[in-house]
Image (tube, rainbow, N blue to C red; front, side):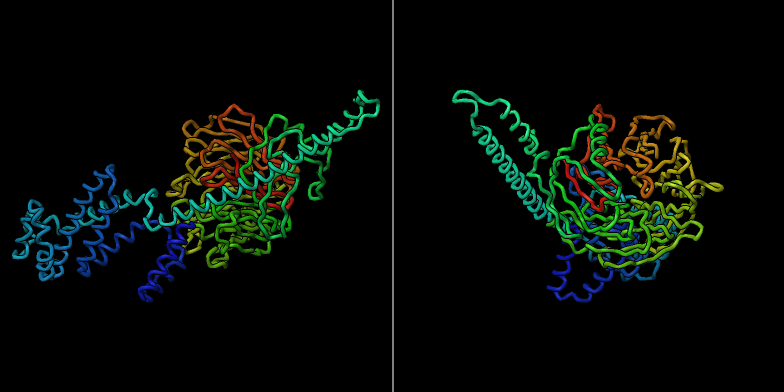
Length: 626
């Protein structure tokens, strides 16, 4: 997204420099809309068949076709270039046909006059066409009749659509967006140098402490005679020293014993402390509880950290936190009804940083998948707010029906401009899942910000707790409090399958990276990876009930997050550390660095080896691991 903003700034600068103020106004106007940041095939087709050809703008048409040729420079795209040549021939022929059908023979003559040399080079395709101007009824001639039919035009447009969809796939990036690659590379290198310098200073401080300790041990006085050493004194001194100096040279376990804490609302670099007893009023953790945690986690190794940032802007326990589509921005919410947008990288622009006051408990967050511009917020009073991060304002304030006020989850389609909300009725219960009654699944149009349809769930369906789209947005997975996982075909708006996945409520569900499987987390702490080829087959499982205790479900439901490769799975925790399981691996797992209270929300960066943990201690932490 930084590339996008940088490219937009360059375009503004150029338009101002050239004095294209009218174009600049149009440019700014379109930027303020929620238009997708990808090549729009339909708009390109509209430009050709609804503007350039009807308005006889031949030069612009030829220029656009040449641009398509310039996009196909790779040797692997030879077949596409051949297809483009055939499409170009058909488009130019349609230009001539349209001119004749519009009774504009002058435009036909102009066409052959301006393109005579080019057409003669391809005389095998164009030679008969030089005589079309002199025919009385070319539409009746067997050689040209097909080109005047509606079927031929429809086929041409559809073929062109398929071709453009192929060459402008998600892997193709405009050259202008690559212009800041070197700038970004330098920025990352500077950040790496800063982190390495910080680690060097920590190691130097540790070495100095070790040297001082050795000097103190050597200076123990003799009290039993000139050649006699009081071994008991040395042993006592060594035991006292071991309480103040770490026993390991591992940087992560002995980083000078200090946290860098800033005022609330700031984002601060932080390296982990040694594990020490602590007290936290939010969940009544005690030294004994911390000792119990260490016993229960004895088979988990601590992650090795590259860097870590802690955000201290919230004033109550965290309910949700998530990376944006690019991973550059983070949205986090707390139980006091506020959402904060911030960036973990001090060198990145902080222009989007904001605090959003929603007036109700936040239950769900999701960024638009095609950009970092729109954030959707679901609340406990039936509200869905759409926040424009560029304009820093709420662009829509939607409401679910009064019967379903709790918006438990929101998910945006990765392809289509739609999102789905999972709302639930309320009932009495001890945990957040027990308090969710019946379910309602609504599909919303993201551009119109209006409901489109309601997905069928049957009569009095149990609440839907978690949603997940597959990569092309055609399949939606929905997890329910009765232990079921439902699968919906979004194009048909119908449920296509479902199966009982857990004996308890399912609190979180995620598609695997290859989308041949789906992961689910039950409220009892059991994790399953289900095959999508053989429904009901379990490919992998773990039991993390020691982390997912029922007491931690009172205010927040547990959730899982997968890394970009689908090799590591992060889980929320009722303890101060979050477990990280190696999917399909032999390792028992890893554990995150400790917060001072339960970990209530997690998310993984869309591309990097980095994750977020939100905690009941009001903090949100970004951790980059090695």
